[in-house]
Length: 209
Image (cartoon, rainbow, N blue to C red; front, side):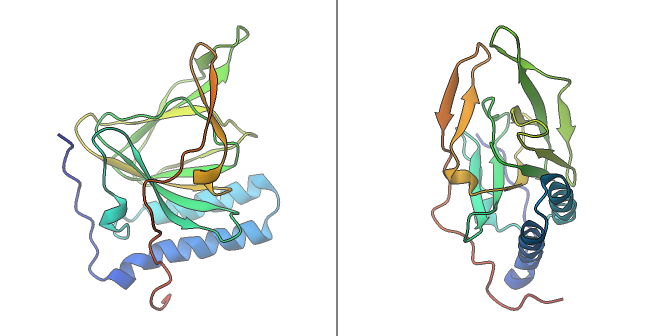
């Protein structure tokens, strides 16, 4: 049985949306004004760290786990597909295959914890763990891209509770052609799609301060 989800504090629906809306504005401005990836990723990671320091804004419908596999909910997709924001919901013990992204990305833990293990190709064509796995706690952020390292495996750090992370990518990640990697060297293409069929309306009501 899937562990119970920690309650999401949403005293007012509009207030609960403000953090995500502010983050979307920040990322949109960074993408528009910063053509170089390195400073862009720094700006996005800083904004994401501020977002995931507060667990009071994610609507419950985008925080639901599945007993079989992790879920990937689209929270916002830029109209020109320059970036997307996604909540990843991990049931107890769930993990991704070894995979890439092909675009820049930043991952921040909102609830629970997750473990990330980088992989790199070996001389014989296999994929081997590269470096030690590292654990991300709430409020912590890591970045990925083909420039700095793009292949990893991510898992829920807990075997008995749900974890949630917020991801932002330099494209509409649910429609991006990507790859999974078998440790023996087999590469398979995939397009992830999203677990939800509609986006939250983050534009309802005033933006506020």
